[in-house]
Length: 84
Image (cartoon, rainbow, N blue to C red; front, side, top):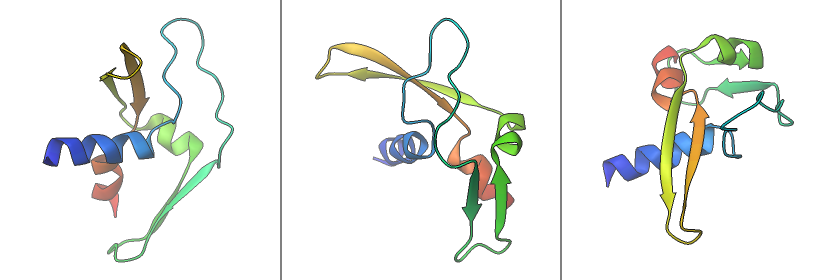
């Protein structure tokens, strides 16, 4: 259950589109900054360039409905929360 929750959070924070297997990555069309605050000890903001410099993780998920493997890539939520 904990692994499933982490995966859901990871996917929510990561790009909502599957990563490209070949060719250059598409540019983001969403916000270019993310803010982490609330109960965080050290609230902060990260720009798109800041996030590009952070370690990334790739997750492959089997989509049972489409019967294919989907690939998601992005900065893990844990890496962002460790900064807070």
